[in-house]
Length: 464
Image (tube, rainbow, N blue to C red):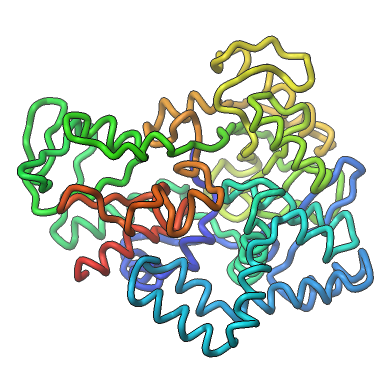
């Protein structure tokens, strides 16, 4: 239900260290040469290839110079890849990061480095509107800021979009063969092979603390498990207001904000979809959007607690990459709507009767709205639809306590709550006020995604 593509893991340091071992335990990725595309309401579509020359030609065909700009943008990320991915792949509050910044400043010079950081803070809207003429090219990249928990107007959205463009072009949008759950199975086997133990169906209710040091955990059944170190991959509220509720807690935890909710919609189909635009049949992820203004409007409506009138829709076709996902002759679609409200104040279109919390009727009415947009994009939709299953942000929160209010990104990813300041400005890397207790996960650097960065960074720091 949760995960679709694993490009962040495939390009992460953790995969570089563990990839071969995970493969021995059954992990296998399936790929498409067409990682993403955008389909607009007017039927125009633009597809990204894992081939820079092909992308340059396709973008230039939409607007003279857009392909050359694409080459310049992803080329700049490629040139700075060692620096960028090192920043994202190690603790920021460290000698290593200070040395990395110093080397980069020496290499570029202070003036160019100042300009580099200024451009890196550019919002996604500013990047797209000042660099690209084609509405189709803008529509291709506009939705991707949503996948890193930002909005088109948020600082550093342009740089994150460029990083995504580089990663998709270089590594694609792979899926795990047999379903995302097979990733967990491979890790389970790897951990067991190295003497580790995984316990499921057991709730950790309290972290044991003695004299300011973590000593283990207590389960909801009263069992105590002693340990020299405790690693908590949880949202800050789960940690400080739950597992540590009987301990003095930092006041700054109240400042932590969660972001928008996530809505998911899954379909079983009696055959492949016939898209209204050619060339989409093997694309891993298709965004249904009319571009930067449409993304901005839907996102702003969700930020204000409204059901978006025209939500931004991300459509995954995992069966086209991995035929084992469904019986022969059938198809599945995985839809994600990354601009859904957590707490509801109304409906932007004025059509759905709402309450302050998600209900089944609201969920299905919003799913109907999404389906009507999808129907216009697939010629044979009504003929092949077999079944659908919708998950509101409240449903996702009920499935995973860390998805607070249905926020899949571990908290708002705005600049004040990211990088050195995630989850709190006072926190240094993964340390907590309690010795031996380490906080990791999407609520810590390098933030959300399937890269496993925080756990990998902590493991290296602990001598792994």
